[in-house]
Every structure is written in C-alpha cells, then in structure tokens.
Amino acid sequence: MLSRIAESLFWLGRYVERADDTARILDAYLHRLLEDPWRDEDAACRSLHAILGVVPDPGQPCDMDAVLDRLAFDSGELTSIDGALRAARENALRAREVVSTEMWECLNSTWHQLAAQQLAARRTGPHAYLGLVRRRAALFSGLVDSTMSRDDGWRFVVLGRSLERVDMTARLLAVRVLDAAHAPDWPTLLSASGADEAFLRARAGIVQGSGGAAEFLLLDRDFPRSVLHALTTAEECVMALGTEDAVGRPDPLRLPVGRMRTRLEYLDAREPIDLPTLLIDLQRSCGEASRAVAERFFPFDGPLTWELEGA
Image (tube, rainbow, N blue to C red; front, side, top):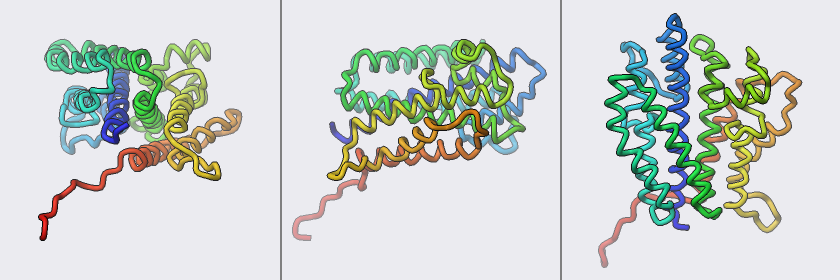
C-alpha cells in the first residue's frame, strides 16, 4: 500500500471518530443543561473546552453559543465537528481507490448537508445537527466493517479510530478526575461516552463516584467504546501491520499500545487505582503510538527539489 494512502486512511478513521465523539459530548452536555436550568453554564462550557484541549477566548463569555461556534461549526478548526468531517472527506478523496463507494457517499452526502443543518441549528437548536453527525458516523463505521476487505486498508482505518477513541475517553475521564471545578457528573460523562445504557445493563444502576463508571469505561472487555476494548483492537491491527525482527522482538510501534493494554488487562479493580497518573499515561501512549505509526508507515522527509544539471 502506498504511504500516502495509508496515511489518509489512518486519519480518516481518526477524524470521523473525533466528529462522532465531539457530537456525543456536546449533545450530552446540552441535554443536562436543559434538564437542570440551575446548572452553571459557564463551568459546563469551560469543561467542554478542557475535554477537547481548546483554550477559550480570554475576556469573552463562555456560553453554549460560543461553544457551538468553536467546537461544532468552525470549519477551520480540526477539533470541531465541521472541521473534522471536512478533513475526513479530504482524506477519503485522497484514498478514493481504496475507500468503498458507499463509504465515500456517506461522507460526501454528510458534508453537503452540514451547511443547511448549521443554519437550522442556529434557529431551532443543535440537537438535529448533532444527531445527524452521530447517525452518519455510526453508518460510516458500519460501512467500514461491511464493505472493506480485512486487509491493511481496513486496519489503518480501524487503528486510527481506536486510538482516537482511547484519547477522547481518557480526556473525558481526566476532566472528571483532575478538574473538579468544571467536572461533569458521572451520568453526563457516561452519556457523552455513549455508555449510559450499556452501563445500566451491565451494572444494574448508576454508581455515584469513580468506582463504577470509571472502571466500566476503562476496563470493560465487552463494551466497544471502553479503553481496554479499543486498545485491544488497536494492538491487533498493529500486530497485523507490523513485523518482528530475526530474534522475535515485537515491532517498536506495538510497544506503546501493548504496554497500556497489558497494564489495564492486569489491573486489580479491588485495589485503589491511581486514576490521574493512569489517564495521563493513556494520553501520552496514544501520542507515542500515533508518532510511531507515522514514522513507520508514512515518514515525511520534506519536499523534493530538483538540482540543475551541471550546477
């Protein structure tokens, strides 16, 4: 597979997952604000910025309108829904010979509907806009699994999706654990992760505190959006893409993912877990894994320049 196609597929998976996760997070926060009008809107909005690693404009009010402009509708910002979907469409176009027709049509039609949905969202509220993004991201994920052969192209898409999922879940938990002033409550956090119904079925109720919800989002083996499940999927893709040397040592790009997967695999939930350190290490490992994949499969040495003959 050409390096440029591998890179496009990897980032295609990441950007669609980023748009999906951002839409889920915004929708969960908006529902909580509507259900509880006494909730501190400024604190909730600052929490949203913290989750996505965006610094709010100094001196400007931090309300939901400003959050939506910055995190949903800004086409020039890759942390926003619009920007992530634009980047995903561009990467799908670059890898058009590998991406299935149905995958391309899903992204392309979604992109062309965003402008009209944004206008409607400004008049009647963003829930239809966020719902469209969530449904189309789910459709795209299903099309990836049902229309692509399980070859290297599929592995790069799934690897990008899995690493982005780990990073976003770790960010959500980190804001809850590390930033008590702006932290979401556990029901909001579970809803933002798409885990509220799965958690209720698995644990038969909401447990207030970090024990139940955090353990589920980190360690549940069956829930596809948990950190352990995503890391396991990422490691399987890396193992299929990588190679071992003559003495059987694993490819270095597997190490960041494998170490964190093993660490979570053998955590004893009955003992206290140092969540702040664990979440920081998770985000760091995602960055290391992303850099390792880039160095291994799509390195960039700078633009080629031609020298004049005889110069």
